[in-house]
Image (cartoon, rainbow, N blue to C red; front, side):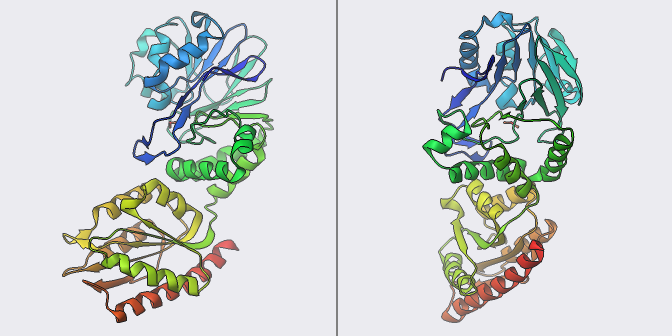
Length: 406
Ligand code: FEO
């Protein structure tokens, strides 16, 4: 896709990755984009690079606007491979450019490229760079979501280039939020924001909250938020900021998500009476079988609702592998403020349910013990017990949710 002008002299020169479906283990059914931005001024400046495989496309986009060799500065907001992976290919064309990044970015980048070859200036929050009529203002955002990260704010144009924050994994020809909403819907855009947050940024909620507060207090006016993935925000800025505030506070809807896997359908047979019990209590339920659902989708849904029930058969004295994988994933993402329990069938030792509950405790979730287990195949009596378990979880969930909402 050719460059797109955000504001007079400020261009998106990124690329659309229509094909990526596995983003370091995070399923991306809609692909993504790697956004970078070219600012035309006395000292033409590039903010961020792109994924290694697509650097040539970004270089072509740049060359549609100016001779690449005229770029004087390169700002590196974030050194993760999907943004800095293509940096060297660009720097080969502009070896004399000055690189601006945080001290931590410099240290980390030295592990990827020979930084001795380049002029590097490290910056911290409050530092500015005058490139002509424009001033770039840097804001460090450590652990949002890597230690090296920062934002670049274009003062005169009121454009915040926010690296991964406020991004979405959406491969789309629409470059702006309003264009996307016209073609699709606000709900789809919100869903993409939640999906991205749940799978990438969830562990750093408190850092994000503090940073948003800091930016608001500093009186910075924002007319455009230009992230490094997905559409650029110019019409729904308040919406995305509010959505982030809510996500940071781990707000959740009343509802339960059942995530499970099964060997010979015995654990699966337990799912439906549990769901029936929850419905009887007026609790909406969503059900995800892990071998039929990417874990990133299950995580997004677990993020939206207050209750999480995980089902696993016991295999070789432990948790079924796909369920263990999901639990490792949510543990790393530090899901919080959830009522949690477990169920599953077993043949002889039956450790899985207990182990799942222990993981819930280690995550500091509110754990409803002891969960429910059945031996081999559930009998009618077992299925009734599952229904009763669903009722009990539903009652406890309503109480827990009411307390969290206060
Ligand atoms: Fe899009 Fe943290 O990289």
